[in-house]
Image (cartoon, rainbow over all chains, first blue to last red; front, top):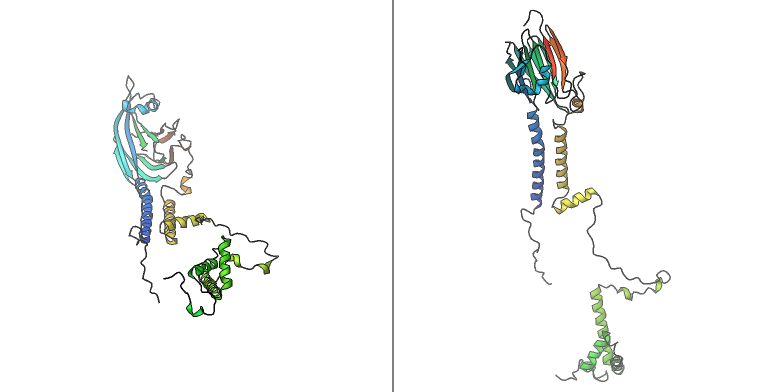
Length: 171
Length: 210
């Protein structure tokens, strides 16, 4: 009987990097990474969508011999000029840049002593995206749905002056 | 050692002339079929067989050994050229040479799924890897469907409150007054003349107020 010598396999032993389990672990790692990458922007967007920015400019209009409009109100010159023919001087009293969370309410004092309040109610996803908010004045309250960049002018007409509240929803 | 060495002295007495080494070599060549090209050498070998019974016995042994070796080498199978096909005459008209096979090419995947599995096998993965990838894709789809950035269809519908306010970039008014509560005085709304024009809300105070 001829004894056959035991022959060792000439194939190289698989290393850790070439093993099947390493490939499976690598695939799982890539899958988890993809899921995390897909979740991260959604989470960041969800956080950003719970708040909205407002720019509130309080403007005062009076009468004078010579018409004058504050240069900082140049974007509203056309609207201010047509508001009331008896008021021809418009000046920017204050500017408030507000960042409100949903449900948050912010109160401001107007030049005539009255209070106004701005409350963020809801952010409706678009398109088009809408920012629902409530604006409260001493004798009125309105709920508005405004697209980013949209502006409203609330004009309180008094006997001797106008109080104008320009509310802009930031983009 | 002489050139006339006896191969089998025990048979030489009744077997005619002694078989010389040279004659034996000729018989070996004849048994191997290597004398066909030279008619003279073949004739000499046949003459040796004719005059010597010992030579004929040796030649028969050579042929027997050659046949046995051939059986061992072919595993008992006869060469195709030696198979007698006379019984099949009428059915087999000719012998067809075997076609030379082209080297086997890697099988093309029958479908996209086979292609994916083939690629995964090349990476060291099999069905388990494919299943893992499918789970990952399904998870991504679930994430995408639950992404708050992709609103449900109902959220895209226009608001219930109709508005005559200026038309925005998306053919929707930029400002919509949904609700308006007035305790005293009056309120008037003047929509902007364009998409970038503000909506003006006039708040007129009642008499005696202010």
